[in-house]
Image (cartoon, rainbow, N blue to C red; front, top):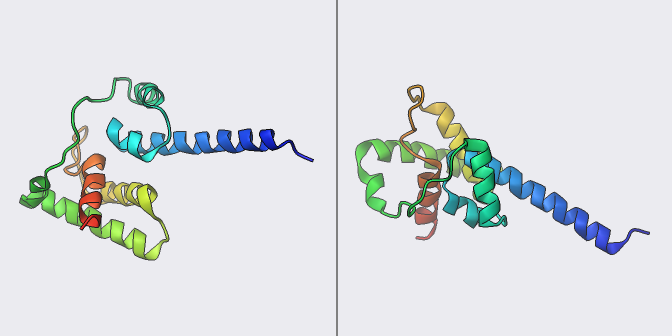
Length: 138
């Protein structure tokens, strides 16, 4: 018979490992610290250490983008439309939900758009997440 506390500790270790993997995926895609904090159960300090370990620098400071106006100009609008249609496909046909659907859709978006070597994509992971929140709140 297993000890209940050992089962709980194994579950918490597995859960923590899953949360770390989720954070790593988002950091590699360029997510800001506030996005990581809202989508994982890891502490801010742990996320900062993880970010520094992966990127070699501290996470950028400042507020998240919050204006819907950014999405209205032609180039951001096109890129946002590409991402959102991929995201809707993920939701409607793959069974993915939440942040996992956003991560997979954003990864597919990056595969579809060309960026020059070292250049940032037009739509960042954080803006993609923000857009999904805007659209789904209406």
